[in-house]
Image 1 (cartoon, helix red, strand yellow):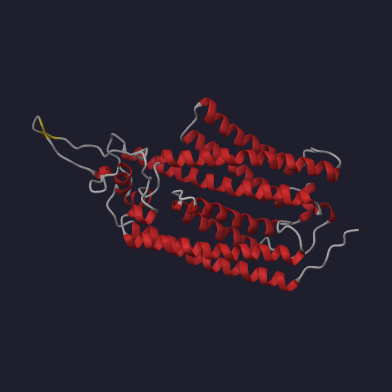
Image 2 (cartoon, one colour; image 1 turned 90 degrees about the horizontal axis):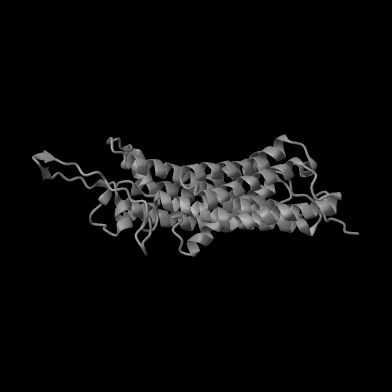
Length: 361
């Protein structure tokens, strides 16, 4: 018979210290990211557009000329860049560099370094929590939240290591990680302890880890989708024939994001890549349910909302692939799908009673 050992209080305490230390360093990374955007915003409008076309010395987005044409001055409309030139990036290196200052870019690089340090502390806290009870570190909402945030940062850093142009995710990522960890340590915290017998299964490692990885990557897609909506509106105002232009604050921020079409493409690729893993997550859960409860599907609230989330993302991908939905309609559908994922995690666990409620918060 398998007898669960008592939690190692020393390791559990060290885990808490590591998580709090990670939060402190994430806060420094957040301030550095803010400095990147602030110092990078002192450039002329259109720096990003210039980077897109490879004409850094002639910012096309703000080119305003007058020409004699029948004795009448002609004002040329700014050109809105929606696709990057072949072999070029949408922004030079990140928001600070795209903003046009070396100082802004320097703060961005400092922010990345701090994020890596915070991530190392964060992962250490997750691993130490697992070692304190000799099991997977996602047996309750506190552990799930801390692991989820660690995986989201891991995915971001992997993309950076692969030389992908994703530094623009840094600020929203660090902000939401801080919120997630703050909620975990203040509201969702659960002392390190063993789980109920029903959760002592190798499927805990398979099913829940897939759910965490899927959600973390879908989160990156949701961030890109949300930023796409802002950037798309910004580009629409630049192209507005009535002359209505975006405000100075919106311009200083949104000009340093990738083009709207690139954000839309990034979100689609991310969601499409991780969708098969989310499908496997549901299948693995059904297999585990069959072994634990004697049935593969029982319309438990968690099962229902997992399926609703799957349907929402399937509709999003199907609409993109067959109906030709791109842009804002697809973006809203993608955000709705991610909201379903969030409700499946927070809403169902906190407000709905079901067979998955035995783990508590």
